[in-house]
Image 1 (cartoon, helix red, strand yellow):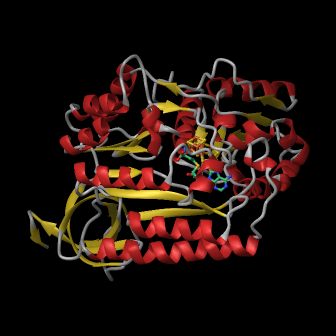
Image 2: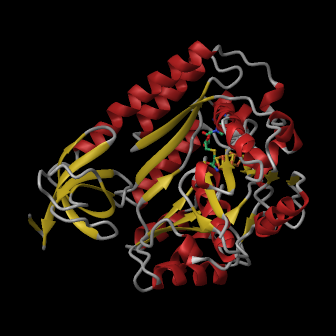
Length: 449
Ligand code: SAH
Ligand code: SF4
Ligand code: F3S
């Protein structure tokens, strides 16, 4: 049996793609291994959203040269967004690469690998015609990372062309899957033990198939018996509707959590980013969302150092963050992406200032997040346990000790347990909180253990 090592970089969409790729390879007779030294086929599924992400991958690829030198028959492949973006340039940079395969061609990946093994020639496969990787997969349950928490693609691609973003060019235009396909796949996963489904789409709120919207998808999936939690990411503010918010409010299974990136608080910068809303519109939407779903947790993304971002633009972002009162935020330093509109603009913000702004936003948000988390102390929350930590009970059984899981609002919780509860929904009483996580005590039958 040939052995494959598949390593994933990047977002949740890539994690799902890796599962689908692995599923196909398992069907083709491969055996997964967890390190590159034992593998016959080494695959990196990669991200190109920022330059730093790319450099990391190239440096890891460079390190494989030794393996290729010792075992020339090993097949090394670059998959994902970086493969789609760099095509034959990747091969020039990494001469020991055998395969460059973009996200639309995974269906034929086992064939490509066979071809390379037979013909001993590198293959570059980045055609976007047909956009084949659109969910026409029969999920292979054996490729799941775990049985209780799974991803389901509802759409992919993006038509927004935010001026800084590489995603539309590497992932193509929007393709939404028909609702019956999404429902059938979700049901199959739930019938096989899944408690929590996260629906994925680069711009999921733009989902549309026939007359169905994301709200229709959520309503339909909420009916599936055995499913405990439904999440969805990522939401673009311009497509968040009242119907979607009411759907979240009216269905217990839908986690009251919205990841809705604002990117900036300056209207001038938002315009240059082509985001399609102003800071005022965004804040109004947040107000409306909280009115409809009072316990809604809202998370956001921000980019600092976009070309032309002045001190006062940055202040506007600080103001928006303070006013929006997010549960948590992801902050990124602007990275020019070749081929995007923004990359044609001269960069005006030095790296040191980007870093300073980045740190300042992190600090401000960390205080806000801590305040949100503090409010939960003393309350009892449902937690889906994701894993056991180290066994820190002297003499304790394997798998006992620290456990971690998530609340419906996606906050990380740590608690102690005498046995491993991975994959179970439990009640935890929150005892303390920081900006990043919660600590709690496991409750038995609603009483403290
Ligand atoms: N589909 C997601 C975006 C994925 S990229 C969405 O629309 O929300 C995730 C985040 O990376 C974006 O929200 C943005 O904040 C950041 N990002 C995207 N392009 C970037 C760039 N060129 N430089 C820095 N950050 C970027
Ligand atoms: Fe990129 Fe904008 Fe599309 Fe998000 S909405 S994937 S940031 S182009
Ligand atoms: Fe990165 Fe591609 Fe996801 S660029 S963020 S892996 S869609």
